[in-house]
Length: 265
Picture 1 (cartoon, rainbow, N blue to C red):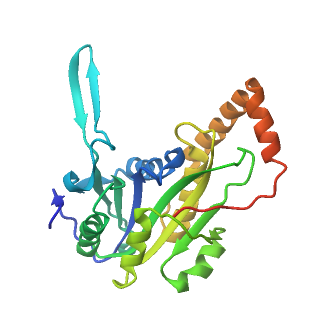
Picture 2: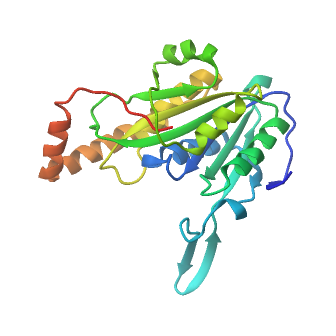
């Protein structure tokens, strides 16, 4: 397959794909952290990658290097790695993609992704995103959802997500969703708001998104450790807020406004 390297080919009659990407979709590291969590929790196995060479501008998306005491330890360019997990039931097999949103050539990148999805008999794709918003850590975490299949709208409402109303610039997730309309593959995109002052991982958003994904996929995993991490993060954030008077004033003002979800796809 062009732009794809497969190390090991799992054979699935049916599977579901979950995508997390770094870049525009990854406020609070919600997208990548959620998929990394699943990879580690399920002990998913790496089986391939999308070759990234023609999808990135290295002057904008720099590779990551690690140097210790003058000696280079690692050099990691942008990567899109596929993992698989074989469930006990045939329809619970998972393909996990942990990647970086391409800077150029979106159509060819999506071509590569969808070829892998076809080979793995993927019936549904989930994409995960986080966006910055003026919210406080005490507010309910709203999860917005978008799909390419009208028949799934009731299910999305039943799991407690808010259906998206949005028009504007978008991410590669929308291209994936649009292209899948003609391929008979359902796509569900789940997004969470992340407080604008958060720097780093925001586990609360990941927890609430993964709660919904476990229901939608039928995946039976215990998220208690992630819930504890989210609660611990909240306590640390509260201590930080107490120490910073300007941040306290900001959050006090945010608490007075009417809560309306916003969305980026």
